Length: 247
Image (tube, rainbow, N blue to C red; front, side):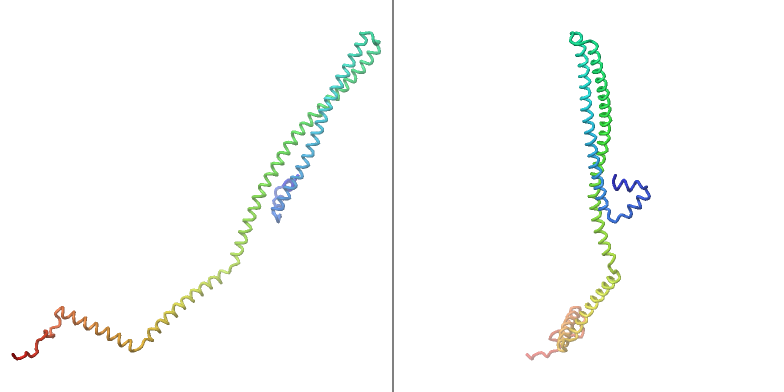
């Protein structure tokens, strides 16, 4: 009936093998849905034809029933003519008998038409059930197709990303990072070297002046500290040993 039915009809193992060989699941699913819709159209056409037969059988039943009733009424009318003296009994009996035979023929046709209608109605119920299932399958596969398309997009994007990541040369990346670290270390060392050279380039006068400033300040600070602590015993009090002016 459809690609899915044809695949699974050849056996589970062979069906799995066939499905594994499908290169484009989306296109194959779309084709399967188209096949199901073709089957649905055929089923609807068959349903319409069976319903037409059922309608015709119903109409035939009503027609044959009316004809049977009509022949019965004609037979009664013929017998009435005998009672009224309008027709000879033998002729009325003959014609009434023929009318009753026609009545039986139409009743038989009516019963056959009624049986046909019941059979057609049973076929209609069965066909309706199949069409409903077929429509449900089409709706289900269409929804699954949407999901399948989304999954294919995600898997394709993931595959491309993984492929790109796999193509990255990790060893060259590590080597590049190590070279960058070495380059930074080299720049830092060079900057420090220039700083040392700058310090060495100071003039001798600057060094001398700085040394004198530092030593003088330190000497004065040291003398003041010793005086405060009384450690400078050799030092004479201010004015001692100086000659006094004569009065």
